[in-house]
Image (cartoon, rainbow, N blue to C red):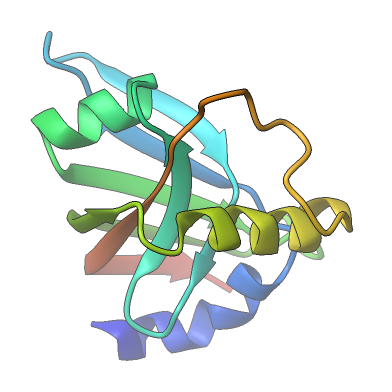
Length: 131
């Protein structure tokens, strides 16, 4: 499925926010704009342990997301898939890399004391887009 994302890979290289939809324990959807990247296999987002996204993804790993090209708002990609791994390994470095991409800062500036970062790796199962 990653090959179908190849057409849209450049969007993930830009400062494009990913709108991530998760489902809570109550069955209600929740959408959050998040930083993201694509490693060639997985769409990756980064969150902190204990946040709503973290809890929702543990309870139900099925997600949908969309990313709009900041250079052409009529071009976007929508991905449906599932979180196949949530790991703390490399998560601090990942959030710093995302901070560099999105803010130009070398370190993630909004870290809270005692915060534990986690990478959610999303395996695309369905990809649709425009443009």
